[in-house]
Image (cartoon, rainbow, N blue to C red; front, side):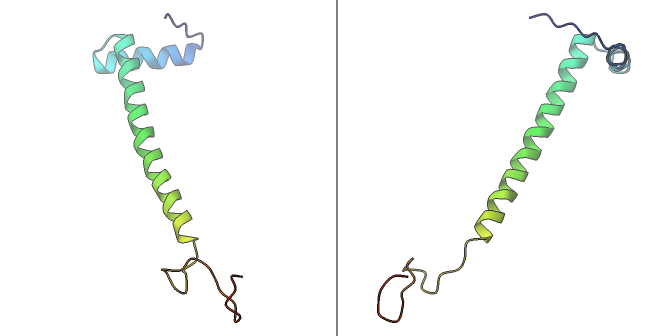
Length: 78
């Protein structure tokens, strides 16, 4: 699928990147996109893990870990 870029500033950046890397414009864009996707995937995986750990930390500790219910003085669950 063809793609057209109408922003002259972006076109200039792609041309500079292609010259600096010695790659074609298409190969330079592909490499840049691949690197960004790799970085984003690594970052989002880490932040998802941090989010999960934060959720687990918010779970209150149970008085008796083997019994998930809280009981009142009459032996009934609260």
